[in-house]
Length: 148
Image (cartoon, rainbow, N blue to C red; front, side, top):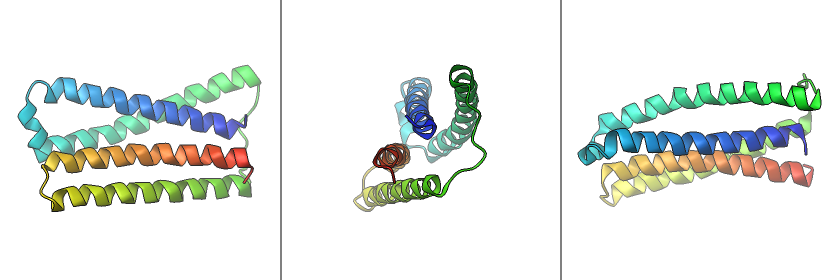
């Protein structure tokens, strides 16, 4: 298994854990206590704004731990150069992620056009961001396996 594949798998697992744990935290701390908060735009704005730095910091910490453990186990240093194949796979993964998120964004807007509650918009946006990250990782793994 390529080192890049291991990184992608670590990212997929960590993103899944972050999203599940953060969703549980927000639900138990706010929504379970006061179900009316689900219709408050300020609540959703705060929830998203807190999610962004939490995700970034957690991913950085997980990558640092991953690279330390990888160095200890395999005694490999980080490659200083990425080749053209890695760049192409990265771009293809980003393209897939982009289209998945755009589709989710359109679904979120359609939910408002059809008169659904405002919280549906935010749940669909949250879900499409998560699914687009998963789609990007899975696509990259598939491309690495195919040898593109």
